[in-house]
Image 1 (cartoon, rainbow, N blue to C red):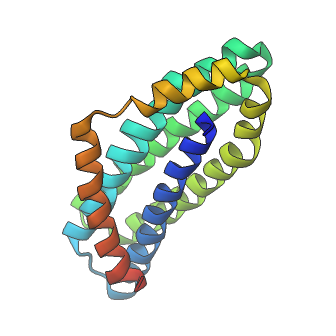
Image 2: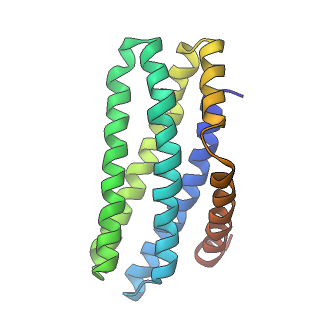
Image 3: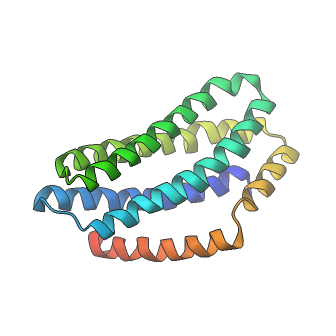
Length: 177
């Protein structure tokens, strides 16, 4: 398995959380209320998994490997790193809007986040990862894959299993799947 395959699999989990966030925002928009516990679960998943695990892996393992393999990849990597920072700010804004019961602001920001993050994932999956697959030698990719595979501790994996159960429950509640 390539290092990019592992990250693409993680993108699929993030996209599932974005589907739930969209449905939660739609529900909030139509009812004018929020199930704070559900919103917290989605935001915690995005903060914990999408940022602290997935994006951290990209920023500390894949992006530096790409920069070492080809200096020409500095600009795309820097651009995607800046998008990671924007996504973190979006999640912070969502939490603030939720706590202050600014539901219309929450809905607006949630839609911007889901659109932005879907676009970001598309760019990584279709453009950056194709470049990585081309540029990284087998040895470089194997080393990156090894580091990515061992990034999460056993406790992290157990925590992910619990969060995925919560995500599945939210998918059933909001998406009926």
